Image 1 (cartoon, rainbow, N blue to C red):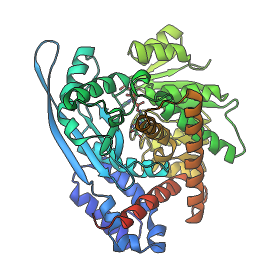
Image 2 (image 1 turned 90 degrees about the vertical axis):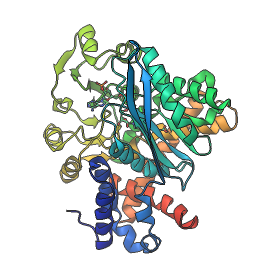
Image 3 (image 1 turned 45 degrees about the vertical axis):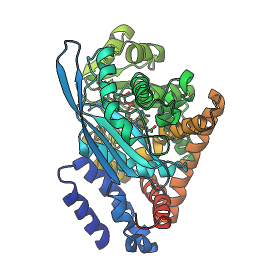
Image 4 (image 1 turned 120 degrees about the vertical axis):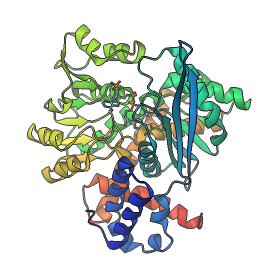
Length: 447
Ligand code: NDP
Ligand code: 2IT
């Protein structure tokens, strides 16, 4: 059971009752509520004005039908979602996920996390998330385009530069954002650049957005290492996944002097003791869209079908695939193998039991809502450039990203200190993220 003060207990019970069967949302809500006990003691006004209660209830939830025709002419059917969770700090902001596992509980957990993550960046963005149970694997470009067009034919009426600004997530990258933007432009007859982020560089996109989540996670880790008097130099690193976040986390680790010795996809993992060859990885995953086994074959590296990438010994672990991919067993093995830093590039990849084991073993742990905030932060920089019809250089944008990640890191540590949990990044992130949103909600009245 949840060990928090009576009020938070009641709130958690309400979350369970109002959102039956949505286990990922329950998990995300519980992790935040468990951190808020010292906040409630210090600030009873958040309870009086039902701020915590309101923050757990999305402002709006949209569910829609997405019919489309496959290459054989058969009609396919999927479900689309957009959960507009909280707009206290700015327009709803958060990615779209296309994956067969998507249902309301996943979108709600991601939207909930996004509220606090976006708040932590210090930028003017609210929280939201969307997606579909569409499975892009094995689909042709034409099928992806027709799906995106159908998805946007409903979504367009709910989004806008000042309302709700989607971006990518699992299964949604530059190609999909292109098709989505094209359809939005066609339906609305407006070149509204700021309605989506993650656009191509030549048509309103920002430098560094593609790299931002992975780079940002590694900048965050670099700050954690510095805090412990260490650096990436000579460190063995394991990254899970081999998508957008994993690839650019790998790139930045290598730039900072570490070696990424393993990565994975949902079929298996690769061990490459010489260090991952980035140009081959990008070619296999980003251009050819093949499986990680193709990388191993061409590189002459070890491929382990199935299994867990967390079996590979490392100093630093960066889970960059999906929620709950690193459980207590995996945490146990990492700890036994001497891992001392874990930063979540993905959203909620570590189970609560794994996080507890890390904490007990003195492993320094960074939660996703802090460590992976660089992606959405750079999306906010893309919105700034769109609003001013400007575009910044790569170096300038990357400096801004690095600065933002240092800010997020320091805010987590300072807040953890202030609320009696020194060194606890997860508690610091939850409290600091919550307080900024809560104060805006208090100021804006009962809405
Ligand atoms: P991609 O679609 O580019 O890559 C996802 C990777 O994770 C693939 O290697 C995929 O393997 C693997 N994966 C996905 N689902 C599963 C699963 N159920 N089991 C095992 N492996 C899985 O997505 P991103 O890199 O963009 O996203 C990765 C994580 O980072 C997600 O948690 C996302 O929410 C989070 N994130 C993303 C941001 C962004 O800007 N893109 C920003 C902040 C967080 P396979 O190809 O075999 O499915
Ligand atoms: O989880 C995330 O922060 C994202 N998928 C990025 C969201 C965004 O709006 O850039």
